[in-house]
Image (tube, rainbow, N blue to C red; front, side, top):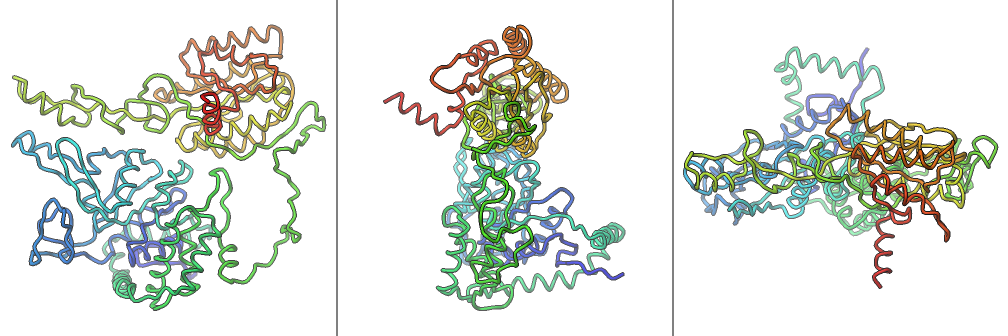
Length: 630
C-alpha cells in the first residue's frame, strides 16, 4: 500500500514537522540562535542535524584565514588579519563542527601550538573548535551531559559572538558566531537554565507509532545502506530546491515588515507564557520574520507568530523539572484569537477544584485507620543546600563532589605517559633538564557525580504535627538538586517493623519523586533496620560501580522504637556505616520547642553533617545566618 509520510529535503524521513521547520528557519535567519532537539533514543536526531548542515548554502571566506573571515566584512581583530579590501577569497561549504562532551578546554578555545613551541620555541596560537565553527554550525550531541566549564565557554561565546583566550602565554580574541544545535535524551538529565535559554528554538521528537510509517522508515534506511549513491541521487533535486529556497528566503528577510500590532501580539504571548527576560521576545520576533520569508510573505501574520511561539517559548516557561509538561497550543490559540477547543469529557466546566486535592494539608487514609497509616503531599520544592562527599574522589565527571577527573580546571602537573600535556610545565622542565624533553601531564580537578541514597523515616512520629509535609518537601528539594547535578539516586524507607528499598539506585529522579509522593507514614520506627538496609545498598552498588562514591542522607527525628534495644542497635548500625568510610548527612525532622536531640547523637556516631530540616533550604539558611550575625 502507498504510505504517506513526511519527507523533508534532508533525504530522509523526519519524525517531527517542528524539527525540520526549526532547522530550516535557523538556516534562513542564523540570528535566531540555534535549535535544541530533545527526544528518546533512536529518533534520528543526529542524522537529521548532520543532513541539514550539509545542505546549507556555502559561504565566502578570505584565503588563508583560519578564522573564516567574510571578505565583505572582515573581523578587524582577526589574528590572521588585517585583511585588505582586495584580498583573495574562495567559496566553501558551511562547516558542521562537533563538540565532544569530553573535550578539553584548550581544544574548544584553542591554545599554544605544542609542536612549534617545543621544536621552534615560537608562540603560535592554534585555533580551537569555536574558531572552526565561526559562520557555521556548532553541534553538541548529548548536550545535557556537557561539563559545566564547557557550558560556561559556550555561554560566553554565544552571548558575545567572540572567543577570548588568555592562557599559556597566549592572548587572542576572534569572532565566533555560530548556529548552536544540540541533541539530548531528557531521561539522562536536563540542561542548565542558562544554556537552555541560549537555544533559540526547542523541539521534542518521538518515534512514530503508525506501523506503516515505521515500515517506510526502515525501508528507506535499508535502501540507503544498499546503494548510498543511488539513494542520494534520488533526492538530489529536492535537496537542491530546498537550498535555493533558503537563499531566496534569506534575501527576503530584510524586506519583511513586522508591524506594531504584530510586535505587541508577540509581547503579549511572551508575557502570558511567563518567560524570564527579553530574549524570548527577540527570538520569537526573529523567528516570525524568518517564517514569513520562508513562505514568501512580506509581512508577519498571525500564522507566523503562532509558529514562532510554538518553537521559541515552551522550553522557556517557568516550571519545576518534576512537573508534567503542559500543552502550549491551547494558550496560543486563546492569545492569538483561535477557536476555543471543545471541552472534553473530563473537563470541569465550572472551573472549580479537581476531585483530587494535592494541597499539603490533605491527609488521606490508606488503610481506613488514620492512626496507623497516612499519606501527605509535599509543598513546592526549594533550592536545597549543596551536600558533598568528603575528600577528593576519582569518579565520573559530574557536578557534586571534588574529584580528579579528565574534565575541569588544571591544578598542577605530574610525570606520566598518558593524559593531556601541561605545556608550561613541560617547557620549564625541558629548559632546565639535561635529559632532553621532559613531558608533564596535567592534574585536573573538577566535580564528580555521586550516588545520593536517601534513607527516609516514614514512622508514625513523622506524621505528627504535619512533619511529613516538611520532610517530603525537603527530600523532594534534595532530589531536585540531584536531578540538576546528574547524580544517581536511591530511596530507602523504614516504618513499622522493617525497612524497604523503595527505589534501587537509578538515574531517573522522576521515578524517585513519584515514589516519594506515594510514601505513607505510620507505625513504629525501625531506625536500625533502615540504616542496615542503606549500608547494604551502598555496598552492593559499589561492587557494580566502584568509582562512584556514595552520599547517605538520613532523614529522621532519631527516635528508635521498634524491637528491644532499638536505640543501641541504631547506634551500632551507624558505627558500622562510619567504619566503611561512607559520607553521611543527618537531616533532623524533629520540630517544636522541646526536642530530645536524638538525631544529633545519631549524626555523631555516623560522623555525619547534622542539619535541622528547616536549614535544608539554602535561602532560609542564609536568612538564619544573617539573623544570628545581627
